[in-house]
Amino acid sequence: MTRQVLCVAATTAGLPADLLAAVQSFDVCLVAGLAEAGAALREQHYPVGLLVLDGWSGPLDELDHFLRRHSRPRWVAVFRPQALEQAPFRQLVHDHCVDFHTWPLDAARLGHTLGHALGLAALSASPHAAEVNQSMRLTGHSPAIALLRQQILKVAGADAPVLIWGESGTGKELVARAIHEHSGRSDGPFVPINCGAIPASLVQSMLFGYEKGAFTGAGVGKVGLVESASGGSIFLDEIGDLPLELQANLLRFLQEKTIYRVGATRSVPVDARVIAASHVKLGDAVERGHFREDLFYRLNVLTLQVPALRERRDDVVPLAEEVFHSFATERARRVRGFSSSALRALRAHDWPGNVRELLNRVRRAAVMADGALIQPHDLELDGLDGAPGAEDLDSARAGAERMALQGRIDAGHSITAVARELGVSRMTLYRLMAKHGIQRPSRRGND
Ligand SMILES: Nc1ncnc2c1ncn2[C@@H]1O[C@H](COP(=O)(O)OP(=O)(O)OP(=O)(O)O)[C@@H](O)[C@H]1O
Image 1 (cartoon, rainbow, N blue to C red):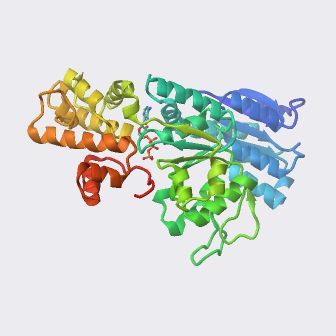
Image 2: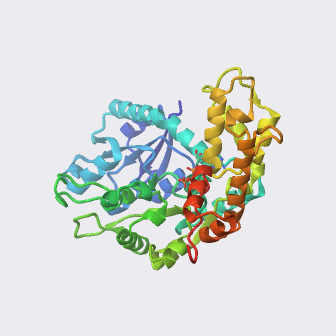
C-alpha cells in the first residue's frame, strides 16, 4: 500500500524535529503554501495530506476554498491549541479534517493518526479508481468518437459551462465525467443531478440547500447539491426540465458564482463548474417559453454533441464485446462469444435506446443464452433487422413498420406530416412509436 503523505506547511525550512520524527516512516512530499500544494495535487494524487497550520497567517476563507477544492486526500491538521478558541477555525477543522493534533506534539500518536488516515484512504481507493476508469472508458474507434474525445480534452482545459446534446443513452453522463476528470477540478467532487427526476417541490432546497428554520421541519440547515460540488463540477442532466423559477437562480449562480440557501439572507460563494445536458434542443424550448433565453446563451458557450449509436455503427461490435467481457463473472460459463448472425443483427439494428440499450441486450443475452455462442434471438434481435431469411412474417412486418417510422422521423418530418404520409392518425402514430421505442422528435411548427 502507498504511504504517500503531502505535508503542507507555511515554510519548508526549519520544521520541528518532533514533526519530522512523526512522518519519518512515510513517503513525504513537503511543500510550502497552498499554491505549491495545489500544483502538487494536480500532478498526482496523495491519499493523505498533513496541514501544518501554526504558521498560517492567510484568511481562513482561502484555506477553506483550498480544502473544498482538494477534498479527496484525507487531511490531518497540526496547530497551536489556542487556534481552537476561534469558532470559524474549529468549523474548518471539523469540515475538512479526519483528525488534528496540537503542540506539543506526540510524534508516535501523530504517526499512528497518519497511518489510520492512509487506511481510510485505501478503503475508498478501489471504488474511486473504478469510477475514474469508467469515466475514461468511452469505447469506440469511429471518427465520431475520436472527434468527441478531442473535444472533451479541449473543453476540459477551460472553465466555462459546457452543454452536452445527445439522445438518451448515448453517454452524456460519461462525457461529463470525462470532462471533469481531465480538468483542473479532478480532485474535487463530481456531483450528478437529474433535474427531471427531482420532484418540483424539492428542487430548490435540494439544489441550493436551506437554512435552519427555513420551513417547518428544517430543524438543521442543509448544504445543497450545488454547494457540495464546490471545487469540482456539477452535472445537470435534463436541464430542460428545470422549473423556470429555478432557472433564474441557476443563472444568478452562473453570473455571480454565489447562491442563496432557502431562507437565507446572505449569499454563499460557490466555485463549481456547470456541465449541463439535454436530449432536446434547448433552442426549441426557448421558443416555446419553457426555457430562459438568457440562461440558454449563458450555457451555450461550449457545446458537445454525442452522436447516436446508429450514426457510428462501427462502434457497435467493439462495445458489445467489451460489455460481454466485462460481465465475465455474471455470464453463463459455456457462453464464449457472439455467433456471426448475432454480429450481423447487432450491426443492422438501429439502437433507438443507444448504448444503454446495447448494454441491456448484451448483458441479458450473456446470462440467458443456451448455446456456446450468442444468437440473434438471445439479443431479442431476431426478425426485426437480423439475418436475412431468419424472420417470420410478423417480424418482417414489424421491421418494415419500424423502418417506415424511423426513416421519416430521422428525416426531420413533423408528427403531423409523418402521420399523414403513412395514412394513420396521430394517436396511432404515437402508439406505434412507443411500440418500437422511437423517440418523439423535438417539436416543430404545427406539431
Ligand atoms: N462510448 C461508450 N463506451 C462505453 N460505455 C458507454 C459509452 N457510451 C455510453 N456508455 C454507457 O451507456 C450507459 C448510458 O450512458 P449515460 O448514462 O452516460 O447516457 P446519457 O446520455 O447520460 O443517458 P440519459 O440521457 O438517459 O441520462 C452507461 O452505462 C454508460 O457507461
